[in-house]
Amino acid sequence: MKDLTHLNESGIANMVDVSDKLKTKRIAIAECKLSFPADISLVFENGDIMTKKGGVIQTATIAGIMGAKNTSNLIPLCHQIPLDNCDIDMQFDDNTLTISCKVTTTSKTGVEMEALTGCTIAALTVYDMCKAMSHEILIQQTRLIHKSGGKSEYNAQ
Image (cartoon, rainbow, N blue to C red; front, top):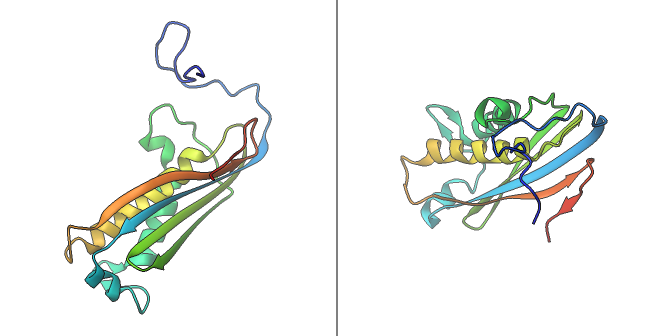
């Protein structure tokens, strides 16, 4: 088992020191799935749903990008990373909306947390905008799909 990186020798929480790391292009992709009751899925058949707050997909896309950009403000000990790109994609299949977030940076540390935060914030935004139709929307299966560019690579099976 690997040691936890956010604890110092005394077991006290600390930010990981990345000052000696090299800047490299780093990419992370995460996804989150939302399951909808069948009657709500039908509402999405013709594309985005317009609400008083705006289009659900468009608003959730912007929220996901904003979430990725603000990850260090939400998660303690996360490094503030300049993002080169953040792409949110949403695909419907039957009663499931899959939200993916791909984040790219040229930095000294990875962007997994930014990708996970981006897709999660987008999912929460969809839930918020659709909860008036049903509280039976499930947010599930948030996971890292891919990471590259640092000393460790990862690809989900």
